[in-house]
Length: 200
Image 1 (cartoon, helix red, strand yellow):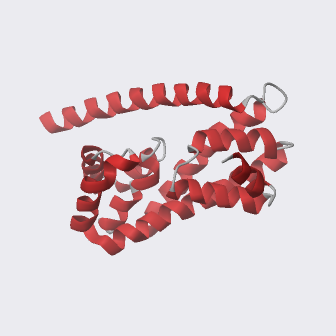
Image 2: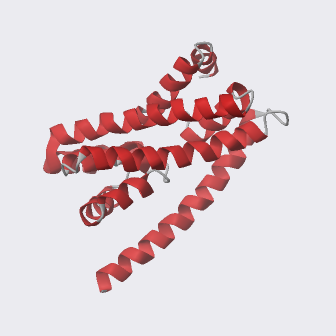
């Protein structure tokens, strides 16, 4: 994995774009670790950080559009069946997929935006958006905004630490712990909202 990262980073911005796109297809390493690493190693100043943000955001959105197109080809029934059968292997629970599918039907812009702030969900929920035939333009715009905000947070964190500790495993562990805590909080809040909607 280290050799792959080094080879990709040797390609400059093209390599960063390839990493950001590939992470959407197979999230190894997780996006927050990758973005942190890019911010620490590729952003020499604020201008370079801005360019890096633009490149990774566009590549992330392109990865989401890839899954959107796959969902559109599959259709709702086949997409749901595939997630039900294989979702656990990519940490996407069938129940989570169904809930976000319902959220897409109620408010596609908000669901597309919020999906970008949950690891794994942000990678594969575009399948539901495509399967439900949500308007591609509104999906792309919401995804672009969500990806930009997500990427900016971790790129900035990496940039802030570029002159500090560069022990990536230690930093990655801390970031993953923070993200896990945020995701648990997010899901608790989201579950509470779903229950209120169901009762209402």
